[in-house]
Length: 151
Image 1 (cartoon, one colour):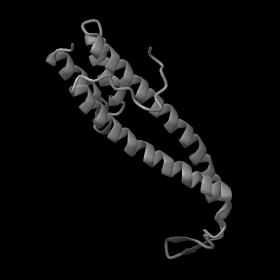
Image 2 (tube, helix red, strand yellow; image 1 turned 90 degrees about the vertical axis):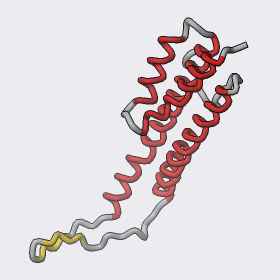
Image 3 (cartoon, rainbow, N blue to C red; image 1 turned 45 degrees about the vertical axis):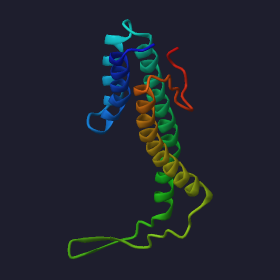
Image 4 (cartoon, rainbow, N blue to C red; image 1 turned 180 degrees about the vertical axis):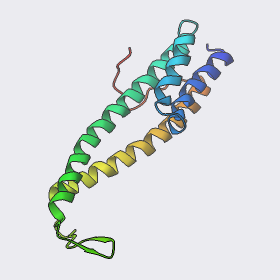
């Protein structure tokens, strides 16, 4: 049976992952600080700390893969479709023949990667809130698609 203090600490541990929207890398810094301070006092807090960190590291890994797919594709598509015939009129810089009509399958793959990244961030936000609710009820919650870096 978990105490109210353990539930509150574990819930705050889950919610601390949302600090990424305020502090860069806050989704790693604050959960690590809370988890390392309280992991020896409670198995429930230790379990939730591992789950939060596993999920955040998994999301980072998935995001990096999607960025490694999308960024080079967009750079290639932009430089492939822009004609660099420039005309300078009265301090204006114009690029002629910017053509978006040649969208290929590789550009569609890049668009899909960007959409998946956006979907991943929305799902991350929702799952953090859901995990915090489950944790506040004293339940053990395991994030879906989380790679177990910490066991």
